[in-house]
Image (cartoon, rainbow, N blue to C red; front, side, top):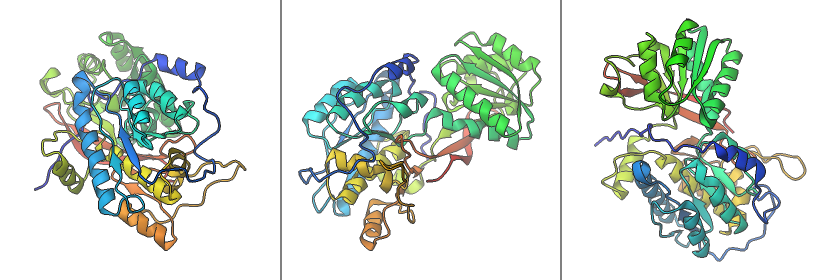
Length: 427
């Protein structure tokens, strides 16, 4: 039986605007050096313990289930392939919805060697502060805020989700591929809107597109921005928004800018149906980070949680757990420091070392823990490309190749997946 569970895009975790200022002013207490590139000695106790932070509550609580199922599935399949050095990998107990910092503290007490999470970018700093002091690497499957690329973590922070700004080249490409020569940019004021719209503008210029109008707006106050977009007579309008997306789309419709001229950022993606006027979005396109999970992966997830309704961040969570186990396998040690020092290598990425050099060129990609262990045994090295696609961590712990699913809206104002695009470089 073939399942297709489409990730929900209307409730992607928001990034608090104040965080950018906080990141610039605050360093992690007591953390020095860069664990991503430092040489380490084995110091683990032989059992690899994985912690999971599920920080979604209220309307976003549905995001907990797919991440929990994916983490359980990854641990199950790692153990079926022999575990870590012949011993089962442990997924520590977790309780969804609690304060993220409290969960991090509890996982340190439980001797987690690596932690997966949190979902919300605004929770990252508090969790990084706690875990980095404990020399415990954190891999988020969902943090997308651009400012987190340079968060002070001592080299203990990674993420398998692409930063928000990675969609800039893809949004510009969608406009150009449709024949546009000019675009108008509408963006919701705040860190997300400003960062992504700037990335789109830069990418549009590189692609030979002319940005004829750029207008910001506050949620519920998009009328003047829509009027500015229409007045510029663009070939396409790119809307970068989150909570204010529906109101902005209604204003674009009122301004006779609807349908195939509209391209939506990931934050604006949603199932609008009767919330907008008839055929308001017919032909519009939107992007969502990541690939739609394969039918085989969905079947495996449903084997863990038969009631699973959504797969948002499931692939990224699965890959985060698998990468952590592979890093421990490469180091032949389960300590947090050893895992952090080997994550870039097993992902197929590169990073500047102490001498300014770079890591070895990655070998042939391996798609599973079992196959990557075989590659290690054969001497070809580990280069994991998993359920979310290539990862290839860079020196900041960011992925260097981001895949996006493209959706096209029908006359009912609901989206259907119609393609995929990749931004950045692979490895």
